[in-house]
Length: 435
Ligand code: ARG
Image (cartoon, rainbow, N blue to C red; front, side, top):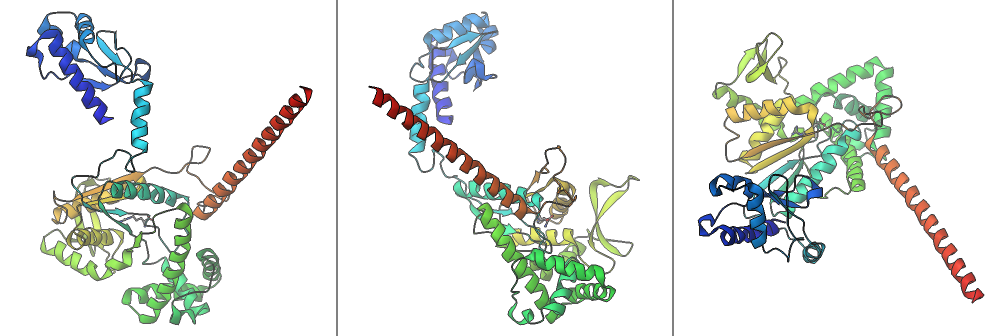
C-alpha cells in the first residue's frame, strides 16, 4: 500500500498547487490511515494546517482542494467531514487490481531488504531433561514465524536452539541410564520410543530409593568434572530427548534448519568469560560467589543487585552460559542482530545479561540484541493453562488433541456437505420428473 500512499500524496500536491498556486508546492498533505474505517481508508488533514496561512476556514480549503483533486482512478469521490478532514475510500476495482498483481508475484510485492544482516533467532530452546510443555508452543511458533519473515526479507538467518542440556536436572536421568541401560552407553542410543516413558521410570526409581538419589547427585558432580562414562550417559539422554522433540517440531511444521546449540556447547568458554569480566574490573566477590553488580536493579533494601556468574561452589549458571553465548555470537558468528522470543517471565534475566554484555563491550552499537517477551498461554478460565491434575500440559498432548478436534470438525462438515448435496440432487430429480 506504500505505493498507493505515494501516489495519493503526489495527486494532493498537484491539487494544492492547482487550487492555491505554486507557493504551496511541496506541501505535505498529511495523509494518514482513516481514524475510523467508516470514514474510508485514508484521510488528509492538510486543510486544518493551512487555515492560518491562507486566512480561510479549513472546510472551505478542503472543498477547494477536492475540486482540484484528480483521484478517480483510485478512489471514490472524496468527501469533506468534520473540521475539514478529506476522506478517501479506495475503489473496489482498484483494490482488486492491486491484489491480483500481488497474487501473481511470488514475493507478494515485498522487495528483499537493501541491508541484509546476519541474524540469530534463539528458539525454541526447550529444557531437554523434561518433556516440552504447552508453554513451548510460544517460542516454537513465534520464533519460527520471525525466522521465516526475516529469511524471506533476505537476511541470513541462523536458527539456534539454546536447549537446557546441562546441570542438575540430568543427574537422575544419567544415573538411570547407567543402572538400567548400560549397553546404551556404547551406541549412544536408547531403543525407547520417547522421553516420557523413560522419564517416568527414572522418577519412580528416584522417589523410591535413597541410594539412587545419591547416585543421581554424584552423576551431576561427575558430569561437571567431565567423567567420560557419565558424559556418554548424558549423551544418551540428550539424543533421546532431541529425537522426541524433533518429532514434535515436525508435527508443528517448524523449520528443519533449527540447529541445536545448547548450554553445554558453551562449557569450554565459561572460564574465559569470567576471566574477561575480571580483567575489565566488573567482577566482585560476594559471599564466596563471583558477581557483577547491576546498574538499575536493586533488592528490597535498595542495594544494587548482583548477577551471580559463578556460585561459591565454583559452578556456573544460566546467566553465565547466556553471557558466553552473547560473546560467542558476536565474536564467532559475526552476527548483527540476535532475537530471543522467550517467555515474559525472563524479562529481568535478559535485561541483566544484555547490560553486562554491553558493559563488557561485547554488545556494541553495531549489534542489536533484542528480547521479544512472550505472554502466557491461558485456559478458558483466563488463567495459565494447566492439566486437570494441575501439572503443565504436555505439548504433544495439546497438539494431538488439536489435530483430533480439527479432524472431527472437518469430517462433520464433509458429511453435512454431502447430505446437502444429495438432498439437492434428489430435489432436482423430483422436479424434472414432474415436468
Ligand atoms: N531453556 C530456557 C527455558 O526453557 C529458554 C532459553 C532461552 N534462550 C536463552 N538464550 N536463554 O526456559
